[in-house]
Structure formats: C-alpha cells, structure tokens
Length: 536
Image 1 (cartoon, rainbow, N blue to C red):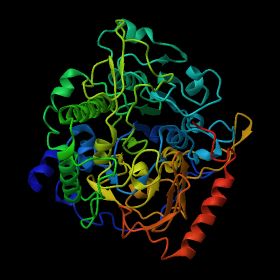
Image 2: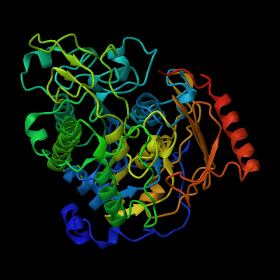
Image 3: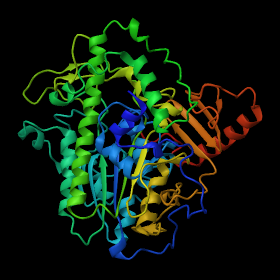
C-alpha cells in the first residue's frame, strides 16, 4: 500500500514518522513514592489498563499490522506509543508484575507487596476487573483471588486460557458463572469481557474514581472466532508469512515504530518458506481466525471507550493498552491436556483437539493454535517468541492516552520501559503514596518507575538495569547492552541501540562486559524470595 494512503487509513499523519519523536526535557519524578502528596478527590483520574494475550509487536494497525484495530489506532492517534516497552515472557509472571510493580521472582503471594487496587483503595478508588487473572497460586479459592487482592468486582476466569465459547472456571464476584455461557447461545468470551467492563463504568458513581483492569484472553489459543469476523479476513493471508513479514516491516518503518535501518530477522529455522508449505489453505485459515480474534477485541475496546465518553469520564482517564508477551509459537498437540480443556461442546459434541490440517479452526469444537510461522510474522522484525527473553518474547506495544496530560497525540517514544512500571504509573497518576504497610503487613518497595514524566514529554532518568527470568529465557539489560540466553545455553550479548533485532552476538568480543552483566543478573536472581521458580 502507498505510504500516505496507509497512514490515512490509520488516521496517522507525517508527525508520527519522525525519529526521535520526543525531545528531552527536565527530569521528572520517576516513581510513586512514599509520602507523595495526594490529589484532591475531584481531580483523581480514572485509570483503565487493558492487556491482550499472546500477540506480537507488529499485529496492531498502529504498529504496522494489517489487522483492523481502529479503536486502538485511535488511542495511538490521540496519545503516545512506546517502542521499547517490555514485559515478562509469559502470561502469569507479566500479570503478577503488572499488578504489584515488582519483579515476579519476589512472589505474588509472598505477602510483602501491594496490588494496584489495594494501594488505590486508600484514595477512594473503586476497582473492577474483567477477564483473565492467572497470576496466583496460593490465595484461597481461585475464584475469589481478585477480590482478596483489592478488586470490588470481578468477572472472568482465574486460569490461564480456555474456550472462547464455554470458558471453564468462569466466575462472577467469587461465585461460579458457567451458567452464563450455558444459557446464552451467542456467548463469546471476548464480548463478555468487554461488556462487563463497560457495565462497571456505567454503574460507577460519577464522583467515585475508578480503576478498571481489562484482561483479554484474545488472541491466546484456542483459535476460536465468530464466523462474521473470520469472513472479513478471507484471502488476506494468501501471500503467506514471508510476504507478510516484509510488508509489515515496511509499514513499521513508515510509522516510525522501528528505526529506518532496522533489518528483518531471518525466518525462524522451524518455519518453512511459504512456497514450500504443503497446507496453505489451512495455514491461511489459522491466521484468519487469529486476526478475527484481535478484531473482535478491538470492537469491544470501542464499547469500553464509548462507555467512558457517555459518562463524561474520558478527558481525565488514563488508558494504557499493552500485551502480556510476544506471539506464541506453540503447535498445539492432540494429546495435550489441561484444566482449561472442555470435555465436549455446549451441545455435547466431541472436541477435535490438535493442529490438524484436515480440520479448519474457528468453531467451538476445534482446538488449535497458529504456530511457528504466523507467530514469527506477529513478532516482526524480532527474533523468537513467547517463553524466550529475546525481543520477540518480551517487546510488545504500549499505548497511553490521557487527554488531560498527554497534550499532543500521535507521539512515539523510544524511552525504555517495563511492565514493572505500571503500578508506579497508576499511583503517580492518582497522587497516591506507595504504602509502607497494608493490612498489618510490611510492604517491600516496588521495582518500577512511573511513566508519567514521559507522558508529560519529559526524559525520565529510567532504570539502572532491567532483568528477566522465566521459562526458556534469562536476560539483563543495562544501558544499550543486553545479555540474554535460552535454556542455560551460553550468554549472548547485543547492543540494542545498534542491533534491535539481536542479530550480531558480541559476547566473544566483550568478555568483560558479559562477566559484569552476568554478575548483575545472578545477584538479582538470588534476591527473589522464590528463587525464580514459584509461578507456573
């Protein structure tokens, strides 16, 4: 597509293309600190955090993708996009870190942390959650966990994934709610999350500040989508993943979400060239269903934004949209089991489980994933996937809209940020001090730093170093240098300013730097009370 026509489609102008986009300004306050002054109640913003599941850096329209995400593109047009924001490499640790502002190795259930809703309660916030919890092992009955960690209302699932038509463990305010999908023939979990989130906005008194956490399961497997959404993408992926990666990277450069000289990482070795793919029709269908899942989520985000606007809350609402980790390469096997897997469909039909080319995904009786090829495309131009601490596993979009503070829309920042920063950001925005104690227990300091200075157009001091450890990955980043490895293999070293796609390993050329960063990582990993092994 022609450069100008593509930008017009997204509603983004030439101002979105310059690099760098935000000029340094005075140093801003970096964190929500103990003893910080509180805002007057009337000035406290509503805070809405929306998180999607298992999507890559390039999937959204405003980050270069072809999937229709007009409402998220609108947030970008009116707000700020981050290009160097990172999460953990899997769902559970990211969610624990998001809510506590502390690295997950410190333990979500350790008792020495405060969640965002717990900390905001002292300032009169009402806190509601819709969607996927999946970040605790020990807090009482699983259905009640969000209510025990500060939320006043909860609709969703405590487990990590499930059917989009009949999600097991569906819960409403701590009680079983599976009857809702049993009784409603047109139940679709993404819609239910969106509609309950919008309802929480509508029922919140206008003089009560609201914290709303919307945690979608889209686009995590299984590939379940509505026929009308799938139909919109029919034939869209006939060119295959090789051409898709090239087209996305070109658009990403036009939009300025990667540098103009960013190369495309090599196709993953487990992905065949599209011309050699023997099951093209099935492969196309997998990506069509994945895109439909994302499309439906964006439609629901539109209803949430509409509810905020209808209540007159939008101008002073901080909205953050992000994703829990990069695209997921998992090829779902026929023998894989779990507490998320239904025995039958709602009307008693058996499930056809596994990535079978003779079965087209999408309906309730199928259970498939989109696999290596399309995950590689989702993560364009980065290497590797979910479960790894290379950029393809941890670098994802972060979009911020806050009309009262982010004065100029369509901006992009390359300041480095991490999911540990979201709790300090929420507390800083609300003018709430980080608590020393909570319910009689001592609270350890958060690891994150507020993003509010960046929202104001300032250059924040940033982190001395950032750390990762989970599943197949370990990593540390200090300044431009990133040390990373997979599965205890030798460390790799990259200069992220010069090599954002991690293509030139400099470990052998800089052994002293490798030693320095490895010692930093080892000390950090040892600092976790759980030893880095608690969550599953």
